Image (cartoon, rainbow, N blue to C red):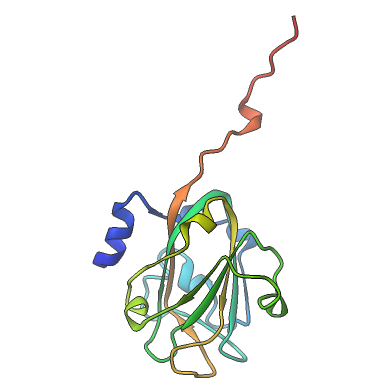
Length: 176
């Protein structure tokens, strides 16, 4: 683990991979042979031979629902120097977005990834905008080199879970 990733986890932030609802994860414009699973799933994302790749142009639209409410602290995206993502827009709790929607809604945060970020330096998000997140949509607008294809080797979301009350666990008090 890189020192930047270590510092993100030392502040009480954890890799949120265990809280991803994999049945609802989607990625628009992904190559069928290089899908999102390669960049996000544990085990796959650590294999240097696997990656996520865009299909018809450089844009990707990634939807990640969570099994419980989370607070997003930072995001780590690894990618190649020329084909790695450059401009990202993050949307908290926006479901069923298409490419036409990314300019209709203001993003919760906009990020410009540097070459250092693509080598493993996490980007801290506007924490106040990501306090009660049920889903995250990541729009990869373009890449570092202006190429037709964007590649992502690894995506790691860091944060914490929000302690919520499960109403089913509460016992009903009988009227006296």
